[in-house]
Each structure stands twice: as structure tokens, then as C-alpha cells.
Length: 134
Image (cartoon, rainbow, N blue to C red; front, side, top):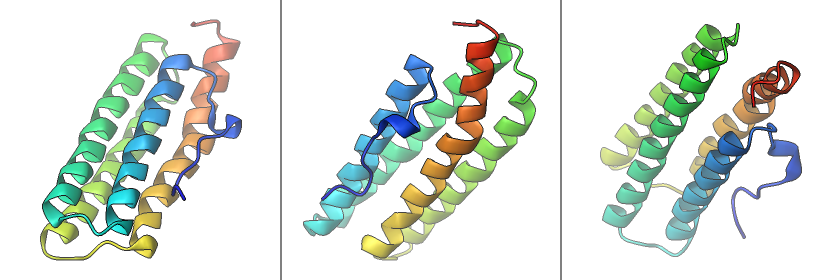
């Protein structure tokens, strides 16, 4: 079973953002599957790097979109992104120091990502739709 299952409730109504979110869901689910099937640490490490890189890329494109659209919440949203990246980097650093991932520890990835989508990203999606910036 997947750790994160995409559903309509996670859509923010901006196709490019939703596509990137789905890609991150898939990447996190890859880590989950690798851990459940006892893949090598090196493979799991590569997958963690893929999530971190994908998250950075996604945040950068999201922030650029917000700035271009003159979204008044862009600065606060960027701060939230920085905080989330710090958490992901700390998680990866723990893994690199020997921390073993398991079902419970992987819920961290789900539990920081989904609330960010349904709260902060959804607010931008609503604003974006209301201001006709498609």
C-alpha cells in the first residue's frame, strides 16, 4: 500500500502545481516502497535526494509563479518553504548518520507535505483563480 495517495482534495487548481505535487507524491511513495522491500541504504539515499531535489525545484517554481502573479502571501509562503526544506535536510542528515527509516519515520514526509498543500498552497490556488492569473 502506498504511503500517500493523490486525491482531488489535494488539488490547488493550478495544473502545473498539481502536477509537481503528484510527482512528489510518487517520489515519496518510491521511498516507502524501497523501505518496505528492504532495499539497500544507498538506493534509499538516492531516493531521498530525489525528493529533496524535487521539493527544491517545486518550491522554486511555485515561488516564481507567486512573484509573477504578485501574490501578497508570497513572502510568508517562501518562509514556510524554507522551514520545510530545513526539516527535510535534517531528516536526510539523520539518515546519513545511520538512522534507519521505517513506516513510522516515513510518515514525517507525508505529515509535512500534505498539510502544506491543503493549507498554504490551497490559499494560493484560490487567490490565483480569483485573480484570473491562469
